[in-house]
Length: 287
Length: 287
Image (cartoon, rainbow over all chains, first blue to last red; front, side):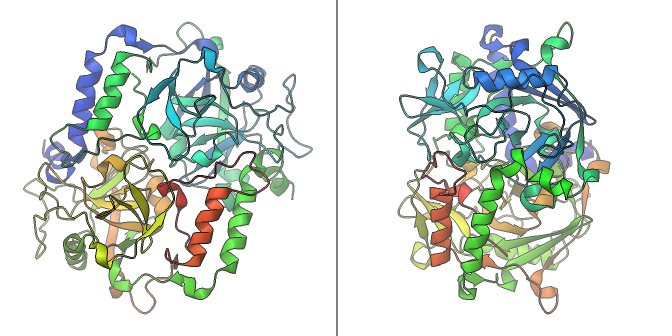
C-alpha cells in the first residue's frame, strides 16, 4: 500500500479532511431531504466519453426550456458538435453550420425567443444564504439552482456548471439551438444578460476537461477538432429509470447544515476559517 | 469561409464583442504600462504538452519562494508527476512517493516551513478595486497578484491560476515540494489557510484541461495516469531571453481602464451590465 500512503501522506492531507467531514454530513441526511429531478425537466447528452445530465429550470425560463425540449425531441442536437472550449470560461455546442445555408432545420421550434431572466417570486422556493455578494443584494438557492435577487426579482446566477442559451446582438436572438455551460470561475457579469436554462447535475468533467480551442474565444479552428454529440435526449424517452441522480433539497435542514459546514470549516486542518461563504462556492450535494 | 461564418454567426456573436473591446483597449496601452516578470521570480515547468510559466510572489511568501527555488535548482521536480486533478478545484504535483521510504531527497531545502500569508503592507503596491467581496473587507492587486485585505494586512487570494503549497495538518507541515494550482471557481476559503506562492502566467490550459482523477479528491488512481513533469527550471537558468510574457502593470492607468471596462461592459451586446466586478473576474492582461 505504498502507493496509497504516498498519496495521502505528508503533502496530500490538505483536502482529505474536507472530504471526510462532508461524507459524515451526507450520511446523516434522511431520504426525504433528497429529491430526484423530474424526468420531464432532464435532458441527457451522450458523448463518446460518457453522458452529461442537465436539469432544466422552467421556473425561470419556461419558453426557452419548452423550445429546447422541442429541439431535443426532434433530434436537433443528435450528431451536432461541441464547437468551443474557452479556458476558464465556457464550453459551447450546437450546429457548427448554424447561420450558413447548410444549417440544420429547427423544425417546429421557435427561431427567436425574448430573453427570460426572472422567476415569479410568489412561486419560488427562494432560500437565501448569508453572503456579501459582489453583484447582487441577495443570493441563495431555488430548487437546487444558484440564484441572485434584488429583493424583488430573482434570477439564475452564472456559477460553475450552469447552462445558458447563446445569443447574438438582440434580446430575442437566441432560441436554445446553441447552448453553453460555465466551465471556469463564475462569469457573473453575464447574469441577466444571457438566459440560463439549467445546470449540469452529472458528467460535468467530461465538458470541463475538454481540450481548449485555439481559435479566438476558444472556438475550435477545424471541424476535426469538434467533439461529436451522439445524441441529446429527453429523460422521459429513456425508459424506466431515466434519472439516477439525487440532488439535495436546497430548502432542507440538511442543506442548511451543508452551508454551515462550508462556512465555518471547523475541521482541524483549517488554521483560520473565514466564516464566510460565496454563492458559487456552496455547491449542491448530489448522490 | 462558410466555416468562419458559421462560427461567428447567429449563435456565436455572444463573446465576439467582448474580445474586440478588449483588443482595442490593449492596443492603446503604452509600452511602459507593461512589465516583464523578473527572471529570478519565474519558474518554468516542462510537460510533454508544452510549458507552464509561474511567476513567484516573494513579497508574500519569501521563505517558501526561497525553498521552492532551492528545490527547483536542485532538480527536485525533474521527473516528478502531476498526481491529482480534481474537477472545479485544483491540480497538484510533486513526488508521488512523498511520505514513503522511496521518497526523493529534498537536498538542501528546508523540510518544514511555517505558513506565510501576509505581505509587509508598508512595502506593497496595493491597488484596491471597488468590489463587495464575500470574504474580505477590501480586495485589489499587488504586482499582478489578486490580493485581499482587512485594512491592516494583505494576503494573496485563491483566484484561478494561483499556485499554492500543499500542507498536512500543522501550520509548518508544508515546504514547497508539493504544489497545486487553482483550476476551478476560486476556493477563497483556502485564503490564509494555505501558503500561496505565485501565479501561472502562461500555459494554464495545459493544467486545467487535464483529465480528472477518478480517486477521492481527484487523485489519479494508478501511476499510469500520472502526468510526467519533464523538468522544472528557474528562468535564470534558461539562457538569454527566458521570459517572453509581459504582464500589465496593475498600478497603471491602463489597468484601471481594464477594470472599468470589465465593470461597465458598455458594449452594445450587453442588455443590462451589472456595473459590478469581483476580484477573481478582473483578470490581469498579458501579452
